[in-house]
Image (cartoon, rainbow over all chains, first blue to last red; front, side, top):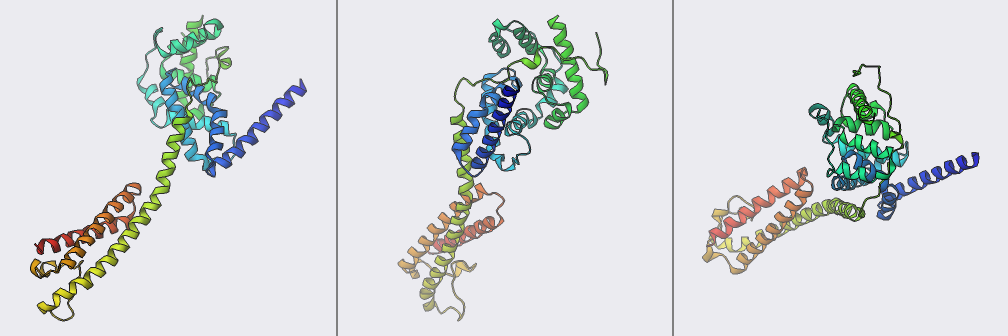
Length: 193
Length: 160
């Protein structure tokens, strides 16, 4: 067990040092190095974009591209204080939600609870997990949540952000983030029972 | 139903943290990213180049204007213009320039050549300004080029 843990830790450290080396090369103008960073992180970023874009694959693709272009522009500001993956993840949240104050608009104006629609992008996302029982139920319940509540739930409970981070990245108040999370969990629990 | 109270948090939904977070896109998105990065890089590289071209064109314009002044002075001499008063291309006294009949064909060709240079400088400066809209020096060069163009047009109009 200890050997496995040590091996995982060693693998993570190797990946981090590879990231840092690639970031340096990319910041110096090496486009191939940036492509390697893209290949290493695209699944994580696209997965995040899919959730933030409510399962809309076209928007998720566009957001993923936007995020990587922005990352390339800001590579010089990456100081290595956090892992590159973490930096890229936060940047993506900011690109998708922060710039247009999307979450702020959602929590201000969009209070309606969604109805399940088999043809909606969310339903399509959920069908992928059809054989996964509980996961499918969770995905379906997630897809029914209002945009604001769902986004906060995704960022907090799935992606591991704190309310303060959500607030600073998206422009909503910490209290609003907490209220949205509470609402999302309550709605989800009601549907899953 | 339980209402939200600050400090009284609804407990997490079991299993949410275990949902899949990675998802491979259905198509390769790198091509689009690559082309956008290349376009941005080209714009960045072109901005200083355009400014340099604009400045060089302006310098050439000044040089051509000087040459033009020297050429225009010669036909003006028979009119006995006051001593020490030249007829520079860039001067505001263009209506006093000699009329067509008195303008030597070579002089007129030189004015037209100057006009082409000014046109070229103007378009290059416009492109440079599009890349660097706040470039004060480029703006002043563009103003100068426009003034010189206007004056050259006056010279040609008077020569008709």
